[in-house]
Length: 323
Image (cartoon, rainbow, N blue to C red; front, side, top):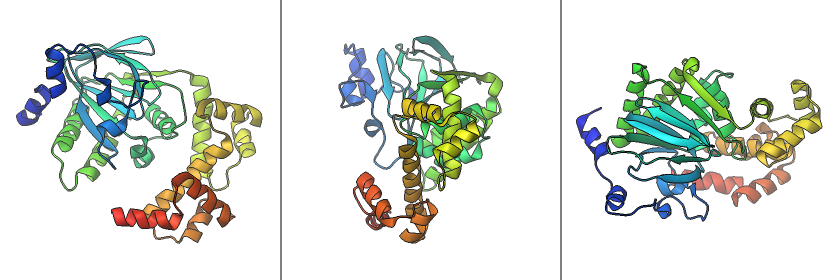
């Protein structure tokens, strides 16, 4: 790591100075506006950004909390001890842990020499990257569930890769790019994170996994993959047949883990695909309606405006104006 960036990492923040001067507890208002301690990405990310990093605040215990984003903890120097769903884990220098947005964890106070980098990442960041990974890899399965915002099981992946030099080099490149952004930084960061995940996939023997319900998760992941691939003509009965399960069982599992019906989940996927086509292509709105699998334009307009508050045409015009 370059010395100037290291000095920025080791320097005391305003929050840390207050803690050292007697402020005993975490100032939750820096992280959330809610009564419940759910760290809000809007407090940590600039508007429109999908990824950023911040050095973890030292000298103070972080009580039990969740996030509304994906968090990667990377131990650049020292160590990090946390309790995740009441499982105590101490990460050593050079190790990573990926936490989804439903995991509950608390973090023990770090010492001055403990430099922990927190990657704050919105799930949408992985829409492209997930296509680079093997379908059956642990990371691919982890990321797939994070892309469905209403999947509600806490999960983590713990990577014991302290001795893997290439992974450490990639982590440093990402940190440097985020601390010194350039005109190509967004594209560079996406590529570097993609490379990091590909390298971590190769180290499956070095991964410790945790999921609240692995059996249910397998069926849910297969359901998500089916919807991702066949969303245009997907239906519950065909999915149940592919999974060799009764349709009512799949329906109940989806409702249990996502708080949505199969129909609502499928609609979310179709609408997100429509948004992608509106932003990234020049297809007409009529063509987009057909591409995402709706036969009734009136119904599509109704549900689109109900979710986004604007018509597809207005949305496209707004995005063009912002860009």
